[in-house]
Image (cartoon, rainbow, N blue to C red):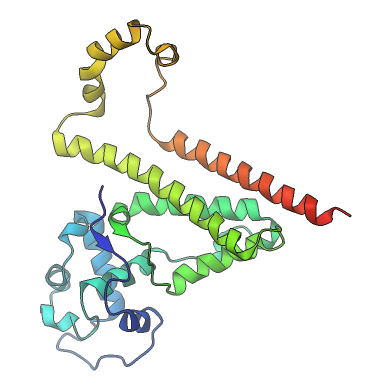
Length: 256
């Protein structure tokens, strides 16, 4: 799945006003009961069901049963709407997570699993380049939780942010691989099993050539199954690596 949209691509001051509930509320429109939250919730539902390519102000208005121009009284356009959608789906409840003061590892593991599940629920997130995210309340809530968990680890503030960026990159990359595999089946009508089976004659000859002894020695079930084991192994390795880094920092801090 390729990137097709970018966060922070609209009127940044206006998007931030909407994210944080600042600025004036629109007066009552022709459709009583229409609210910004209803608009954003409907937009998320459209993207979830039909993909980000199906999202437009007209489509959202149709789903709400209002005229397209009615939406512009609440949100300037699709770019600003997308920023609101990104924060909406990232809703964070700290009380449902491990106490960050009890240890950084369970807290960050819980965050990572949340993020993985988030991409399963909203695959369109992978189409959004969030290199320049607009930080709304939900995004800051989760970041605040992570920083509280990492307090006292000996990492610098910059390194704490780098830890979170590393987790995000790993999760996004793994989720993208899994989703692209599923989309390939839909796009081509050829199952993954049939795709690899078609390569079997050529690959068998390559393995018998003696040129690839390490590959030829792999177990037959090496490439079977979904990408969940990849996520689990990668997450454990990341956590172990950061644990070693933190232990090293702590040891240096405690040294006389």
